[in-house]
Length: 338
Image 1 (tube, rainbow, N blue to C red):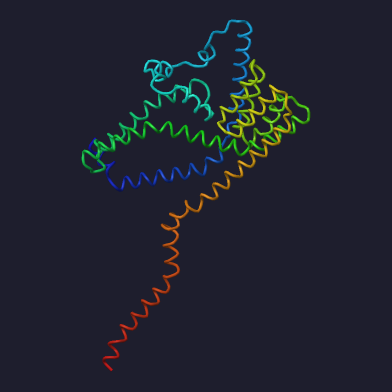
Image 2 (image 1 turned 135 degrees about the vertical axis):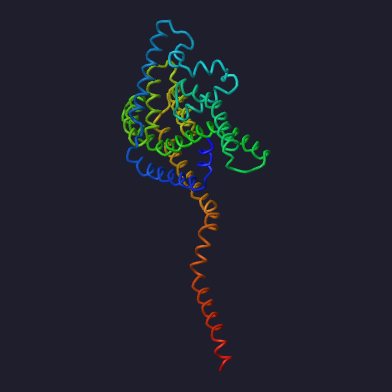
């Protein structure tokens, strides 16, 4: 054990380990794009499974044999569920908000909810144990006892918020991908509707067209098509589309679709206006990012760019002045001898 601690504390071993990790991450970064997969097959399978569950649910409702919560109980189970129920994590954490966030991140079903709830408990404990092992067993960092306690508390807090940060990043990336492709999909939907297709056939056609460019949006359209086919209230299907994406532009379109279903208003004009608005929102987001770029580049330019620029510009002059002063100093003894 003592030899292991000495090897772990040794500075050269730490540098070698960091270099190996850096080389490994570089190789992974270069190789992973070659094996990248957008997960289209998995998403299609999820939509098919969801459609099959809706079909079974619809048949059970027609037969009058469905019990409340039977669909949820049929799709969930395992050790994670038992642990969550025994620890009563649904009562400790906000299960509804967690389920909504996971749904917006593309993680549907009860199994991701159980995994997320367990991560909220396991991750802080794991982070605390790692901090204790690093600070008290290895004693790599020589700090006071009070500072070690503060670092352990910080690791515990980081582990507690780490699942939330991970899910939030998934939601943000998913929203960005959907926001980029949503205006174009509305144009395709408008063309299909004005050609005489029903809204279900139009959504199915748009799903096939956008599957290659944006699988996330294709998955949402596929789920909406399945819900329109089997749910008794069609407004619920449109409302679920807006809740799953979490985008205001999508919610506006779903509101227009609901109004068209209820009041029989013209859907083509509404889709044309919504497509223009969503395209404008996309352009505004791009302009906002462009406007925020100069302040973000200020600090890196001051720290890294300007010193190098000063060295390149002033370096030759400084070297020339230094060499001239050196020559003058070396010539003074010769003049004195003369």
